Amino acid sequence: MIVCIDPVEGDREKTRNALSEAGFDIRGGGSLADARELLEMADTATIDCLVTEYDLPDGTGVDVVEAAREVDPDVTCVLFTDDAVDPGVFEETIAEYLAKDLPDAHDHLVSLVQESPTRHNQTAYPLPDAEADRLEALGQYALSSEASDTSLDRLTELAQLAFDVSSAAVGIIDAHNERFLACYGASFGALDREETVCTYTILDGGATVVEDLNEDPRFSGNETLIEAGVRFYAGEPLVTEEGYPIGTLCLQDDQPRSFSERERRMLSLLADEVVDRIELQHRIEDREAIPDG
Amino acid sequence: MGDTVYEFDSLPVPGLRPGTTALLTSRSAERARRFALRLFVEAGSQAVVLVTTANRASDIVTECRAAGLTVNRDRLVIVDCTGKRAWFSSARVERVSDPTNVGGIGFQFSKVSQEFVVDDVGPVGAAVFSLSDLLSGPDLQTVSRFVNTTTGRIQRTRGLGLLVLDPEEHDQRVIDTLAEFCDGRISLRYADGESRLRLSGFTDRPGEWLPYELPTE
Image (tube, rainbow over all chains, first blue to last red; front, top):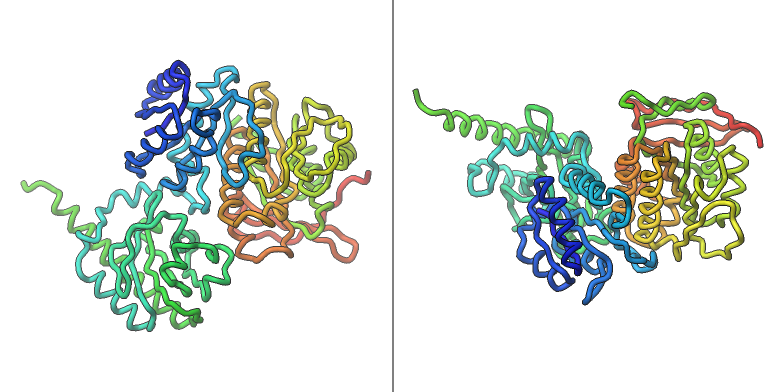
């Protein structure tokens, strides 16, 4: 879905038509207030892109971009305008810019928007190689905390006890969020992917250990983690049989601490056990999906 | 077009496909700039856009001329974030208040890139001299979003991008994070009277330190 904000109805219709012809579902408005309302109503998982004019009756396109990032930090934002824009207005707000008065401007806009679901070009975190393939592989697993069997709960409890940490969790990283299949010692709801350490864990093959999050420049300003009281993190990627990292088995503690090679090995073994459980469940579901006869 | 790569005759850098961005690390900002400009010359860049955070636009123009780049207002654009007094420049200069205005830098970069696309000018070389100054203000996540957006833009326009960073000024985790957004890293060093470079990320294994020499001015 594309959210399109333009105070001039004729221009908004031109943009809507161009994007609709390309197969997108469009929600439109003419003001910052309209944008906020549309963003609140929309299921954030389905906003592919935001396209906004600059001069609005109640604000600017930069205000719209800031509002969009509060709702969905990953959303691709495009400032589509022929207004004179002072570069000084942006500060830390980042968006793509496309001049409306370019020849074939709407064709360029469509190309830009078409790339947005797959390229993740405006995320604040790096992506693993072959992210599109990884997401496609993840989509084949019907994973939810309700559907997962109690073995994952037992494994997270075992991890919490074995490592003597505050909590342990099995997290799944989808396109924009991390959600938890099992968690022991804490209760984590779904998190924006850019707020998580786990999104960095799936970049590399082995364990990611952060002995003190306050001392790590990637996470020291992360308010979500600060509010959760997380100071230590260790995570091992969960890698499917096809080789795709779909999530993590991770540990958290409220004090900084070290993590030995022996502990890394233990975490790796437990993560393999988690993957085996997930793959087993997947095979059972696949078999149950085959009609009899 | 699909098989086209940028080739570098006098530098030990492998062919790079259009749309590549490299993190270019060097303790010497001047050495990094000279290297970047030489790379653009050898890649046959028909236009160049350079973000400068510490050196005024006129000084950058001098370095471009010395490197052998075409200097005129149609083909060389400098996004000057220094806030230093402007003199007449042979290149086109766009201004941003200071290096911490990463959104403004991205806006100017985007505007110029589009104009080159419309004018069918290519290949385009794009560089940030340097990311180290951008990191002095906004948090790493904001700079990461800027780098991600920039590499995406370079990829779409099939240009060649170089983002300069002083590795001594930053935590290794910052460097590694920013390198993840790029297609690879080119490290420069100078020791015992010799310039050397090392490539990593473009192939499965980091390369060795290889000697290189830039043409004398």
